[in-house]
Image (cartoon, one colour):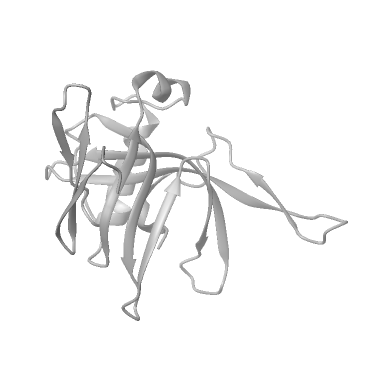
Length: 191
């Protein structure tokens, strides 16, 4: 275990991360599990304001940003929350890790970093897979005073072309200003 980030497990569904700053003040972060089978949720390496701006993200939400609209939609789609977003600050991180209990009671540890490509099984269960690039990982405190974790994704889309040499599909990456597929998703889409 990293001495700078000790972890205290409260119970199966809630964990605390203790982060130490230069003055040794303890700041703890409890991330709300989206479903009962998710636990041990941790985020790592908080970004500074300069890095957030360099990546083209916003730290403070306002009605003029697309991010507030994306976040509102994610809260509604994943948590059934239809609410005004009161708390406006987002905190970005390099990585997230968590444990998921599968249907056969096997625990799977998942670690995801910004810049990685993920694959997601399509909800229609016809063995169709979707692919996305993790552009950002952030947390937000909702009106219920609980922290939720989200991904900012750019989706790969099938160009309907095939590579002549390899015989595989050719994909292209969704542009940042392309809203055909949603950019903000709860982290639990990867399970």
